[in-house]
Image (cartoon, rainbow, N blue to C red):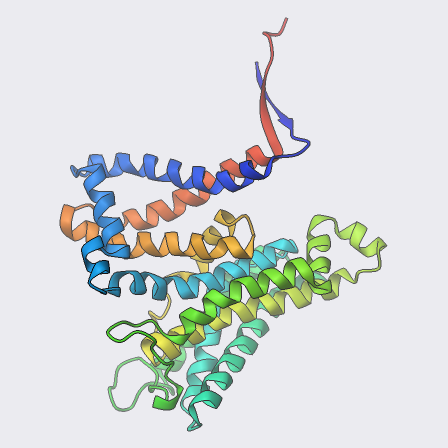
Length: 359
């Protein structure tokens, strides 16, 4: 007879190995789909890896285009992964990072069209995007605190509200008059993020995203706010007994989470597209949920998790062109990775116990 038994504790190596085990299990399961498509499993994964990070010969010659493209794509997912990780730490179930990213992109796009000196323009865009994202996240948090509305449902539905609000803008009063296409006017040249490596798109937003992870880790692990967030998430009743104002902590967490997601939108406007369009996010906000879970809500783990998903997204297109495997395999890997991580998390709190047959 097999039953689940609660664990008293788990060793550190076990917690570190879980995400790696989840990723390995994901690749093994998805290899069956590659085989069904009639392609070589090792060749397909090899092409995916090479497309995401480049081959050794190219790296020796100083060609870093592939790996920088992976980092550029990972940058918004680092921000949304951090946003989800912060929110989930407090048991604020923010499923609205996608809408918060779009709100940040809209605000950044508006501010970016105002003529300003370069450094001031970029700071103003970041501030506007962070405030817009935080404001959107504050809505489901306030509804939960004041009216006991389920934050999963309200934050998820807000994604559609923001998206269709964006579509109404770029199809109407905000449509670029020069091109006539449903896109916003381009931001000022002074607001464009600087590129650090010639011939690539490695822009300032990527560096900021990489720096944001240790900063958020410090906030969560070493500050009073972070302690309040962790205690509120672990046991809100104990937090109240200790004098922590749980409702205020939830609202503060929502603002921080939404601001991080909003910065993802600013990075896409200032460093990649230089204007706002309907396809500015192919689901970066939803990918943030997978990333946060793979990282076990640890901000430092968000960076490698985001790079992994970015590599899958970047490499799946090249794999499809070379082998004929559908590009949708990247989405399958993303979803399967989340499921595998959820299963793995079950074994951090429980273990299988085998006993003799019952009477």
